[in-house]
Length: 470
Image 1: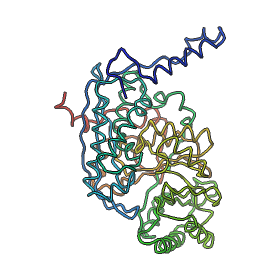
Image 2 (image 1 turned 60 degrees about the vertical axis):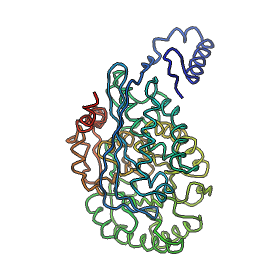
Image 3 (image 1 turned 180 degrees about the horizontal axis):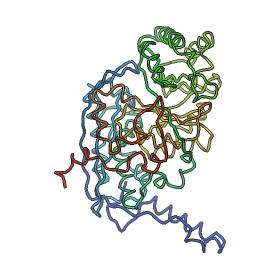
Image 4 (image 1 turned 90 degrees about the vertical axis):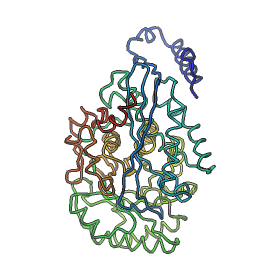
């Protein structure tokens, strides 16, 4: 936790500074004299005031994990520094995705209220404290926010990603405040040096990946392919027993492959449309997934499977590196430590979510993946248009995914928000060339990079929510 007295420094700061001093003493004189080339220290920012609010957005039912969400809460956090700068961060809550036990144990609104209470708790924790690095800020508050969440949900096994999801708006506000206080005006300049290698690429296009819930007809998926979407996220893990599930999933695979398996695209090296399956942890045994893959081979669909995301529940320690397909971690990779463990279990891709696990944690995960040569792509949480561009800033900078010629980003909000076009008006750069999908891709051109997708620009809609609090 933070020290309320600005004259003191945290234990982490002391260790870091001591390490720098010790290292400097061991360097040759000609290197230590080049101190002018070291990055300038970032300002220490004191958080004077905090505030929060939320908006409820109705959804068309989105079915996965054997359940469905119909209501999406947009959490909004305000941080004001001692210098008078105010910044507002936004987060979309995903209770079912982040901890299905909490979702099942409460009404949909109650589950959202519990997560929002954790956001408010975090804001009260950091009020009156100081920070100079948003990543360290997240590291400091995450354990206490998670402990608080376990208490109020009555769930001692509450998933870490539930707490991370609750912290997205706080983390985003911290990054925006950090940027303004340090006169940073572009996302590239925002990335700390330690995490720049993992976010160093610049795609000219990013695939816009729609997501179809369990039970979607093959005809609807074909319609999306006809509209230009060339990689489509397909939810598997149908409701019912494991036997009922696999039978339905196999039938679904057959229908999809018959409908779009012959489609071609210029964005893959083999020219074929790739399949991206997400079972959201519904498969209990490796043998069941192997039945799915055997059927894919039988019908000629196996070579078109680009990735299978989270087939098993995260406590399942099965090794997946011998299945012949790329298996991606998402829910199970809460933190960088969890991601490292998944890589050891043979997971050969990671779905990163700056909009669900915070930008701070995502930077650490993408850097680890870069060092381990494990490809990443961005997955969605059915977020609003502004958060789509927080994710897009990451997706556009990830190393190319094997077999693909563009960046990859799932974006399904336009499919499920009933008021998507209204939400689009809240985007401060709603007319940007990169904002809307064009024939299955986002054009991440020079303007996108120059304007950071608009995420550093205030949104009048969210600013107005706090006008009376000034």
